[in-house]
Image 1 (tube, rainbow, N blue to C red):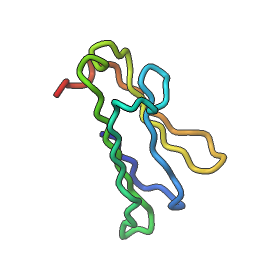
Image 2 (cartoon, rainbow, N blue to C red):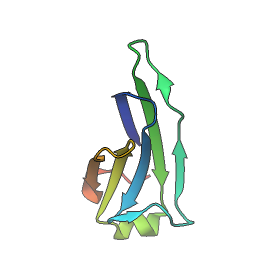
Image 3 (cartoon, helix red, strand yellow):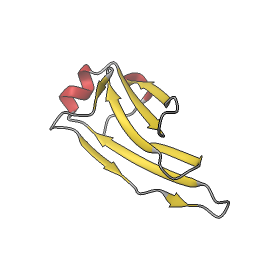
Length: 86
Protein backbone atom coordinates (compact mmCIF):
# COMPACT_ATOMS: atom_id res chain seq x y z
CA UNK A 1 0.00 0.00 0.00
CA UNK A 2 1.18 3.48 -0.83
CA UNK A 3 -0.04 6.43 1.24
CA UNK A 4 0.38 10.07 0.30
CA UNK A 5 -0.49 12.66 2.94
CA UNK A 6 -0.61 16.45 3.15
CA UNK A 7 -0.66 17.12 -0.59
CA UNK A 8 -1.85 20.30 -2.25
CA UNK A 9 -3.49 20.95 -4.64
CA UNK A 10 -5.80 17.99 -5.19
CA UNK A 11 -4.48 16.92 -8.60
CA UNK A 12 -1.89 14.37 -7.43
CA UNK A 13 -1.93 10.82 -8.77
CA UNK A 14 -0.30 7.65 -7.46
CA UNK A 15 1.12 4.98 -9.76
CA UNK A 16 3.23 1.85 -9.43
CA UNK A 17 6.33 0.41 -11.09
CA UNK A 18 7.68 -3.10 -10.67
CA UNK A 19 11.37 -3.34 -11.57
CA UNK A 20 11.01 0.01 -13.32
CA UNK A 21 8.04 -0.97 -15.49
CA UNK A 22 4.73 0.86 -15.15
CA UNK A 23 1.79 -1.08 -13.72
CA UNK A 24 0.35 -1.96 -17.11
CA UNK A 25 0.31 -5.73 -16.72
CA UNK A 26 -3.19 -7.18 -16.97
CA UNK A 27 -2.38 -9.52 -14.09
CA UNK A 28 -1.73 -6.63 -11.68
CA UNK A 29 -4.59 -5.28 -9.60
CA UNK A 30 -4.34 -1.63 -8.64
CA UNK A 31 -6.87 0.07 -6.35
CA UNK A 32 -6.76 3.83 -5.78
CA UNK A 33 -8.73 5.96 -3.36
CA UNK A 34 -9.98 9.38 -4.39
CA UNK A 35 -8.24 12.32 -2.74
CA UNK A 36 -9.66 13.04 0.71
CA UNK A 37 -9.67 16.62 1.95
CA UNK A 38 -8.23 16.78 5.47
CA UNK A 39 -9.18 19.35 8.13
CA UNK A 40 -5.99 21.30 7.43
CA UNK A 41 -7.01 21.88 3.78
CA UNK A 42 -4.55 19.36 2.35
CA UNK A 43 -5.30 16.06 0.64
CA UNK A 44 -4.48 12.40 1.29
CA UNK A 45 -4.55 9.44 -1.13
CA UNK A 46 -3.85 5.74 -1.01
CA UNK A 47 -3.18 3.06 -3.60
CA UNK A 48 -2.81 -0.70 -3.28
CA UNK A 49 -1.02 -2.95 -5.77
CA UNK A 50 -1.58 -6.69 -5.92
CA UNK A 51 0.58 -8.82 -8.20
CA UNK A 52 0.62 -12.60 -8.70
CA UNK A 53 2.96 -14.52 -6.37
CA UNK A 54 5.17 -15.77 -9.21
CA UNK A 55 5.76 -12.20 -10.43
CA UNK A 56 6.42 -11.02 -6.88
CA UNK A 57 8.98 -13.79 -6.39
CA UNK A 58 10.85 -12.57 -9.47
CA UNK A 59 10.52 -8.85 -8.68
CA UNK A 60 13.54 -6.93 -7.48
CA UNK A 61 11.71 -3.77 -6.43
CA UNK A 62 8.34 -2.03 -6.31
CA UNK A 63 8.06 1.76 -6.58
CA UNK A 64 5.15 4.04 -5.71
CA UNK A 65 5.25 7.32 -7.60
CA UNK A 66 3.25 10.44 -6.71
CA UNK A 67 2.94 13.00 -9.50
CA UNK A 68 1.24 16.37 -9.87
CA UNK A 69 1.28 18.29 -13.13
CA UNK A 70 4.78 19.14 -14.33
CA UNK A 71 6.39 18.79 -10.89
CA UNK A 72 9.08 16.18 -10.36
CA UNK A 73 7.59 12.92 -9.08
CA UNK A 74 8.00 11.85 -5.48
CA UNK A 75 8.93 8.17 -5.26
CA UNK A 76 9.42 5.48 -2.66
CA UNK A 77 11.01 2.18 -3.65
CA UNK A 78 10.91 -1.04 -1.66
CA UNK A 79 12.84 -4.18 -2.41
CA UNK A 80 11.17 -7.58 -2.17
CA UNK A 81 12.93 -8.42 1.11
CA UNK A 82 11.36 -5.29 2.71
CA UNK A 83 7.79 -6.38 1.93
CA UNK A 84 5.82 -9.39 3.18
CA UNK A 85 4.28 -11.77 0.68
CA UNK A 86 0.58 -12.36 1.25
